Image (cartoon, rainbow, N blue to C red; front, top):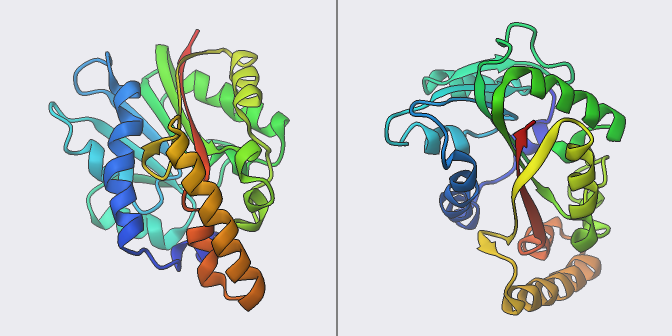
Length: 234
């Protein structure tokens, strides 16, 4: 089944803690200034971290998720979320045009085949958004991840950096209104987190190479840098 290796990953205490702290930090700049009870589309709903957070927002949200994996889609539907099953592109034809206040893509943009495919999806998203609607993108930074960008997930294809994502969205009808970066759930500007990231990469990378045990791959990349970009439709 599509993306079963992600479905079958063990979700440990660290991953749950990261989601608890990271999702609100990512959502805050995208939600700020949106109308009451906004209409939100999440492409790649996964295990439902964003969906669970958004349902607790004061005033509520009207949430729709897109998920390609049937088991994950079933679980989210059973939890009461409105889920469309689809592998994109293209986006599901039944989605209403010009009605969404916000579209979220968290750890999904890097899975597109190339920049042309990504540009096509941005065009489809623009049609779904209201005038002035927003797009939240969160993804690994190739400049920091290096070989881990591809080793961690076989379906990572599109190389993304801060400059490449800024240029791509600006050429496809969006302007960047907020940019940030994170290591785990910490904002990554502080030198301490850079040093921690590199130390863990070296230490656990050595254990991985010596033993061949993939259990060391998660801590190796735990503090690699990920980029947040919030865009507005123009």
